[in-house]
Length: 391
Ligand SMILES: Cc1cc2nc3c(=O)[nH]c(=O)nc-3n(C[C@H](O)[C@H](O)[C@H](O)COP(=O)(O)OP(=O)(O)OC[C@H]3O[C@@H](n4cnc5c(N)ncnc54)[C@H](O)[C@@H]3O)c2cc1C
Ligand code: SF4
Ligand code: SF4
Image (spheres, rainbow, N blue to C red):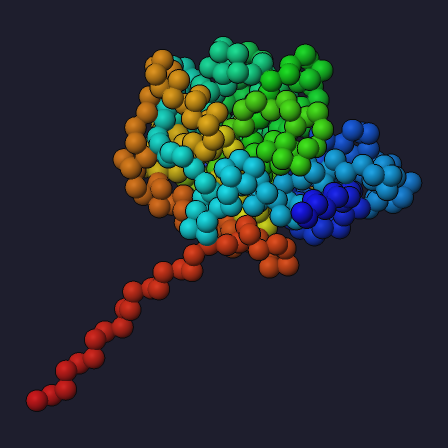
């Protein structure tokens, strides 16, 4: 019988193959898993990357790794064959090429029944409703979410811990710059929590299952619920100054809310509303997003998005048994209002289209799996039929 190959890859391999190759999303899984605290995280504008703080062997190597520590590579959801490994772990099989949005059980439209939660949420308030419900029903005792720094006027998104309904609602809504919510892990544990929900973009929602599958130490056992946000990209913080303010005179301190629905929508505190063409925003795409193949948070228990015809509903992809259990119980006790995903076929078509677009970004120099999808359908022949020959 073949024996499993010993896992020896460490920071040196992660540094070469992911951190400096363009594959690194900045999800911070490696930082959270490092038991020696020699990895830190640079969340300055335009960086959002892990780095080694002990420079004894240079930034690209690690003394603990040389002695056998492998936790960082085990926790990295972009290292080597991450996608089929996590698929097998979560679903018992690898994704088929036509499952471009990942393996799922149900696709539905949901919204919070509580009007305050629905109103404060970005789309249907589903994510916040799940966190409140899961906390009240003992599934979790804290959630790793994203807040705005200080009084909110800097629009700098930062990771944080929510342990009450008020804290969950203070974190509701979407910010379109990066927030590595995984980094709130340490604070949550220090505060005494042991059953965590992670809310994070697609890249982050592959962290809990990859940690568990590759046995990345204590943190891997603490994630009880994994909620993903559909995501095609995040923007550099510089977009506020260099585009919104410089070109449109929109100062971040005067902004109230933002959303992306085909265009970048911005609501101002004085009641004004503005739209910015997304093509103009592309130049501020965050570096870590440029090779990301996962639009649909394919390894979350529940993936959530705002695409589709109905602005106040959350498009919801239920993927795992725990995800289904939570959604079914919430529908049964009236915490959620639901309708079939088929009510909005355009949303599902767009989900698949955007998933394809993201998969095309995965480079040919890395393993094949995340790029696999069916060949595009041939375009209808638009050429005019030949004129019949004159009689
Ligand atoms: C950067 C980003 C890009 C997105 N892109 C798309 C997209 O292309 N298509 C699509 O359909 N949906 C996208 N979404 C998801 C969508 O905006 C909503 O988050 C989702 O529909 C859930 O809505 P809700 O009302 O249920 O969530 P809410 O109840 O409002 O809860 C949202 C949760 O997300 C957390 N959060 C907010 N901003 C961030 C952030 N920057 N980083 C990490 N966590 C954050 C909050 O802390 C909160 O817990 C994106 C979200 C983000 C944050
Ligand atoms: S993708 Fe995430 S886990 Fe992997 S190196 Fe980058 S920050 Fe670390
Ligand atoms: S596109 Fe979204 S999911 Fe992908 S790396 Fe960027 S933030 Fe993460």
